[in-house]
Image (cartoon, rainbow, N blue to C red; front, side, top):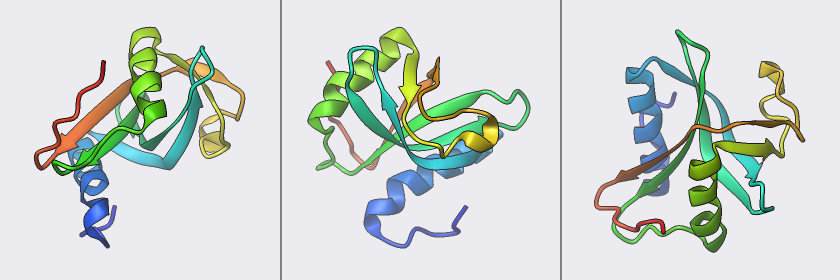
Length: 121
């Protein structure tokens, strides 16, 4: 984990990583692409793994009152929260035995920081 973010736009992900560490979670990958059952592609900011249980959590971080969801996030994130399943489209998790094309359980968390107020349907 970086001690301080390199730019203002990275503050949200830094705060999310810091609070994940306080929960006993360690970042295992950045910018992981997931495809929902209906075919919507989204990219979460990070994936963390619980040090004690090994459980994965997929985190999207938004920082500031002007931050917004992208159109695919408005559709894809509610679906991932509802189904809790998705297909991974990267090999960034291959060290954990998860390959591109694997359909896995998704525990999605959205962190809003510093006045973020956009909401999902």
